Length: 477
Ligand SMILES: [Zn+2]
Image (cartoon, rainbow, N blue to C red; front, side, top):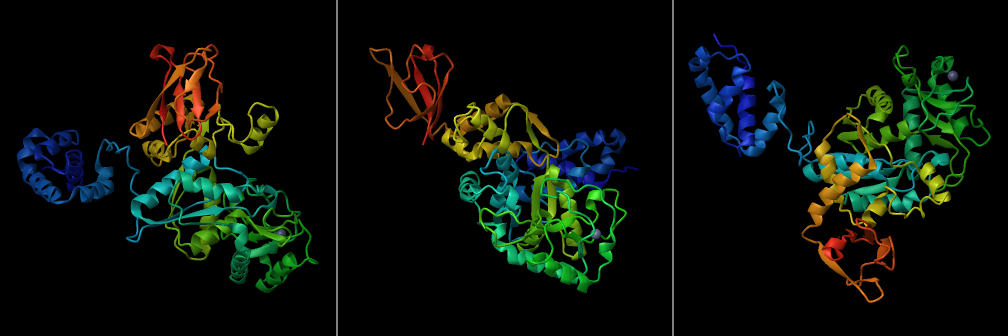
């Protein structure tokens, strides 16, 4: 008696079909089944079943086969090697497409490589399935809001992703968050805590373990009054009251998930809103509200946000709203590439970089000026897929991979440029528009070293190679 799960047979048939342009051979299904416990003496017995499955599989289109294979992949002993030119399929994709978002914190002033890599998977899925892609600027922490981001984020997101449906700053939607808070209070899902001096509970800091306080026993009416007192200029002062989520499970092993804060009083003048508001909703509240309002279907976020995702999930659950599918990405850890705004700022001050536009800085705008195509980043992201494993990279590795992809992309567009040495030993550019943005501006042949890279604004770069009679290439529009 043969005991091979028909799903297993089907999975191998699908794998074989997908690998051979939609046509599966019964004999190719047989050999992996020997590794699954099939005995030679049972072949005769199982063959009709295999033939039947193969014939069904061959009737499907290649697209259908791929979809089916995704579902049955778990039956394969060796997982199918994913096509690295495609992102893995998402679950439960609606016919109308996916609704996704990128939500950079306003604490950064420009898009850096981290934003590019975190946002790219969502961008690619919206391109693949259709739907909506929102740019959300998280700027409800007045202390950590860079005024520059309002101008730079939309421009840079449009360049790198090219498919933003619409963008907005959260601080422009304060009334919506206030209404949401009032709804939570009314449903007894949030309470005003006045018993403890509020500690620093900003967006980034993780709330410290705290004692469960009696404020969670406040009546709804009491919380409504206290909430008004938070909003009132003559009411609570900063630190005297904080709005908290009323967690269902007060015995959670992770204290950061119990009665976490949702809003606080902060009188710091906001770069965009000035002194208009005194109560600021915290990130978890705004994100949850926005995801609900925009009916986000899928969320792809950095693994470091796992605790925040859990908090948001708790609010969704309390409101009995279906949670979007959430995927976590491992981080890119660059061993020698600085992306912190503060640290870059310090190094600019020290003179290590000429300014924010220094093309050595890993910011979207500088990548653009260096001639990188957004697709080069997309290719890197596709190669990695939705991996939760952190990827450690040195700067050199990053640029090697990027350059390989970029070179491939601009091959067709590239203009090869020869440079000529004049009588004075200077090198003359034969392309009048080529504006050098780094390197020796007068291109003195005596000063140029072999292998030296010269960058052209928006065009790309070229390596100096005396053996090739000072031939430069790699320029493109
Ligand atoms: Zn309290």
